[in-house]
Length: 393
Image 1 (spheres, rainbow, N blue to C red):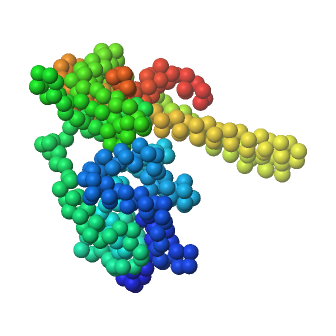
Image 2: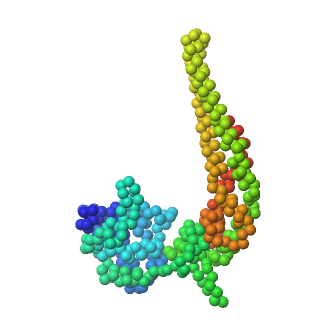
Image 3: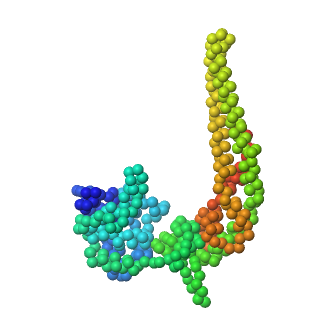
């Protein structure tokens, strides 16, 4: 804490534009290559009036690595960012925004923005801004204070409010097939003046048209396609059969119970072998068997016991799998039964049945349903339950 209050830098990695001094790790010096990019960002913002999105496009179009990419590729630092997908080191508006509001570029050191909740609970939480520790004029500034203040004033009015505060039906569901980023909703008017909604690749819109293509898709076309696919799945899957099989699996004569009976029988076999093994010593002492026979039978019983233990272990594993299927969440089966005659979509239906949707460049979509893995397990179990038991025994 004393180091923070004195203005000494105590972090692992300095902000983009600075590096640690070779003479003192608690002092920062300017990294000129990155600092020049920082100067461009403030100049474009204040003097040219560009928005964060436009600045982002300019940086990506000329091929400048974002701060994470720069630290890893140029400075060879072991720096990781959990938000980076597939080593995508392109700029996004939030990165530009963070640079524009960071007072480190006017020579300040601000620390203590986050803290670990406790030594027992290693959860990092945000600290209120009025509790941050700021010490001014600790290192050489990259930009003038006046330019920084102008940027702050522009940032205050450069914000957007959601249209109506209502969560979109497709929020968190749509992804670009090629880059994997979320799709962004936009509005447009046609020639007749009608406003319609459509989705566009987030990378194309927010970063650069050289990093990905539009992947545009009208909401109207999306809803129609998804509704048709859901109805097709409902009609193809025999819901009644699945529910009947679920009920059978829960009956008293279920395979799970049969496995338990087999397990108990095998445990009795182990006890019998242990009793035979204990009797061998007396047989040898009474000279009913030779020492060689005693050793041979003893080893045989021990091998047989180990084999049966393996069978019991396999039975336990298989029984656990079956019970997981039997007792697993089959709400989606009930949902399919309820939605058999649906005519329109809503947020609840989408989130209950769909994991995510990939949007292709040719307006095609790939729907990833939540239930497919469970459905495969159930059908595989129904068709192969007798084979599974025979393999164990």
